[in-house]
Amino acid sequence: MDQVNQKKLEVLNNPYIMQRVEEAIVLCQPEKVTVITDALEEIQYVRELALRNREEEKLKLEGHTIHFDGFYDQGRDKENTRYLVSEKVDWGIDVNSIDKDEGLKEIKSYFKGSMKGKEMLVRFFSLGPTDSIFSIPALQITDSAYVAHSEDLLYRSNYEGFKELKGSNQFFFFLHSAGKLENNISIDIDKRRIYIDLEGNSVYSVNNQYAGNSIGLKKLALRLAIRKASEEGWLTEHMFIMGVHGRKGRTTYFTGAFPSACGKTSTAMLPGQTIVGDDIAYLKKVNGEVRAANVEKGIFGIIADVNPVDDPVIYQALTTKREIIFSNVLIKDGIPYWLGMGKDIPEKGVNYSGEWYFGKKDSNGNALDPSHKNARYTIQLEELANIDPEADNPKGVPVDGFVYGGRDSDTTIPIVESLDWNHGVFIGATVESETTAATLGKQGVRKHNPMANLDFISIPFADYIKNHLSFKDNLTRMPKIFATNYFLKDEQGDFLNAKIDKMVWMVWAEGRVHGEFDAIETPVGRIPLYEDLKSLFLQELDRDYAKEDYIKQFSLRIDKYLEKMERMQNIFSNITMTDSSFIKELENQIERLEKAKQEFKETIVSPYSFH
Ligand code: SPV
Ligand code: MN
Image 1 (cartoon, rainbow, N blue to C red):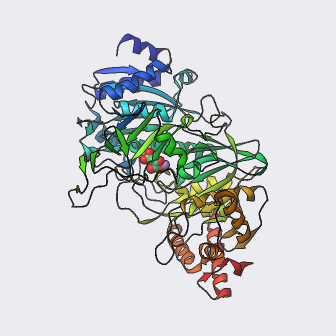
Image 2 (cartoon, helix red, strand yellow):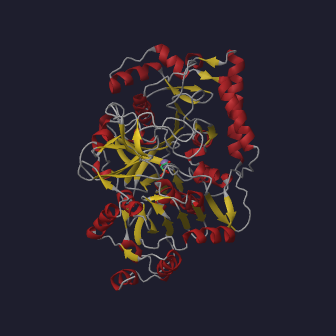
Image 3 (tube, rainbow, N blue to C red):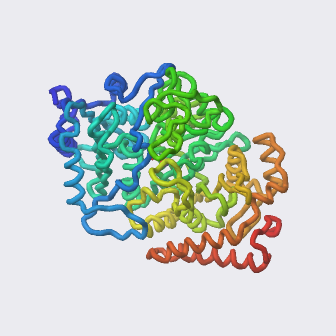
């Protein structure tokens, strides 16, 4: 490290930072070390470095670049993401772990010399707004300028904030190396590892590039923050934050947790509404209110199906000049193309498989899509016309509603309000969702995904739930809790709703917060009246909403719900729930469903039966 860079570290006056950087240098043996402060020209340097070392290439429109991840590195690698533990843990959920000494030894052997001939970047960020009750300082070391560039779009730069640490070790630490590269692609995929040291607030990630694996501040920090939040009595959630604009010019803030690729971003981007964040939220109680802040300041969003009809705001942003990193889409003549963009896709081009042509097959003989289903764009929220004016408020925004949703083709109704807080926690904790391309492995498999956070829960599941249950204590402004399901199908396998129908569900929920709509109490919660939805469909979407559609969408499939509860019983009977009120919720839910089944003697009960 030259003197200029050394000096930048020294002024932080923090032995822990020094130690981290020095250890990383000894281990990874970079050719050069560059420390980046908050100065704009240094951030510009990172942008240019990504182009110079060809991790990104310029596209036709100004500010647009393309980055490709390896063919086998197109989603989060759950299998090779492990907690480093000193003794075996039983958290009541599937936990991928490895003995700490053994794991550290293994991963260090992969980091050894991994930055030879490369430049190490040392970066300082804040999770959450800087200078706020939410901020957690985060130190990232990486040899990937793409990773560092992405982090500049997604997180708040915070070199100055590290001075305020006054020498303490209260920061998260992430070490990443893309490892050995060929044509700028990590080639040691069999040695891809992501190891999480909870006690050391550190994550080590090697031999990968896909952002969900490589970017420390995204899903790796999420795991560290869930533990910290649980210890300190606040919440770290896989949630969007949005302003829903209701009557009389009011803005009501909602947070919403959905598994990856299940409509989280598109909900936060609904036309006429405003976005605070689309992926990760910190929630704290302040003076009896729930306040939420976006951990990030940008979007790493799924690009498939972004088109002028379904996602007009993002589509407009993605097709005009501004700073955007496209990843794993199809490129032809400097123009990006993706699945479901509402436009013809060229017959050939370049994608994550190299030269692509229509009909190209993978080694199993399956046709290769022109762009990957998990192809993405990275953009700053400030580029979007619908950014909420409070998006950067260090105090966060006041939250009046939580929404939980999964990809559920046969059970859950489109929108329902929980009976109370504990029932809401129960609804969140029992989300099931069919797997998507956001993680490696088979798609379409129904999985229990509590609070859409299962992949990231880093504490015993009972503690996680207990923290949710007790979060209501001392609240004077109690958020309502809702569940949505955008993916319900009929017997023929056709979706019962259009994508944009979520607009009506959100506006209905907003009205409920302000006591504006009546609801029908059913065994699974409170559901909308047909008349209210009819007028909302007309008002929001200019569409006639037929009574038969309402009946199909909101009839309770009692047997399906009971089957789900049986699956939940199987899961929860293996977990020692420290807060018995949760198990009570499960028992009550089953009882209410059984009672309805007996009373109506039908397996599918019309909403009108509950009047
Ligand atoms: C998700 O998969 O939930 C994402 C993208 O938000 S990733 O960075 O892969 O986590
Ligand atoms: Mn996510």
